[in-house]
Image (cartoon, rainbow, N blue to C red; front, top):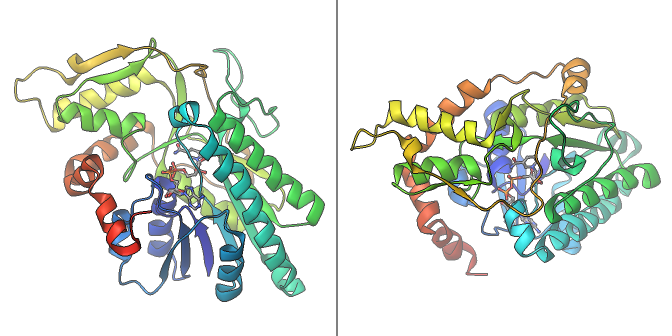
Length: 353
Ligand code: NAD
């Protein structure tokens, strides 16, 4: 049994679906169901006895403590977070509350639980903290990609809150001996991505005939990783990662935002041409840049590749094609998200909180 937090969000839900597709080990899924949590993504598991969903906050130490004692998981994988940089600029409070205070309370509940385990259970227990490459700050065009030894230099409220959580996790290992692992991953894309993020936003705006907004000059560079490759990396680190270590996860796919949008437009021109026959790229609109926008992120994933034998299965070209095709084939999911009706299912089950 493992406990996954934030398992109704983009990466967490992909992780839960992949985990139960590869393994029989049950999952307890604790998620607060903020705007980013979507139980419709997990509808295929509604009658699966291996999946136990609980609505709750990682910052609710009593709730987490009772879940740990009831289910006695052998590992916790922490995806729960506020994750959108633009939202963190407009309202950083929730980011501090969940990413910093929430992680602290989660760590404390886990520390208490861990102390109740036998020596053998203690040594095999793992707390895996899922984090981001944004904690390292920004790179100049000629800088080497981020490695695990790069200094933390977060620039946005989001990345600062994630950096703080990474430091707490590290300290709980060094001070209390908690067996932790941390992964710092580049930008993910793939199925079930909330359309406030660049790739799903561009696909859905394009087919709806809306503008495709590009920040500044569109030359900001990101490393992109197909979400299922990230899930496989987390499974591998959980299985074989060295306690107390951090692992960078990335796809060696550095792309400028404008090129990402151009690629999506070309795939759409082919898979679902506009009714007027014109290219989707005509819908591109440049908008004012995000304040403090990091220029370039790039990940050196050699530690994970060489020590644990992980490799991404998708290139950007294969992954982005699968992603565009998924959004075109799953209109029920995308329409429920864009119309907001995905919240009704949650409200019926849990009340409107
Ligand atoms: P997301 O915003 O799609 O999902 C976050 C989930 O956490 C949601 O289901 C939300 O309801 C839940 N949640 C929020 N606050 C909570 C709380 N206090 N208690 C319990 N649940 C809560 O995010 P994502 O893109 O799936 O990212 C998951 C994790 O991976 C985050 O920690 C993020 O920092 C990290 N990460 C994301 C990316 C990326 O490209 N998306 C890249 C690297 C790392």
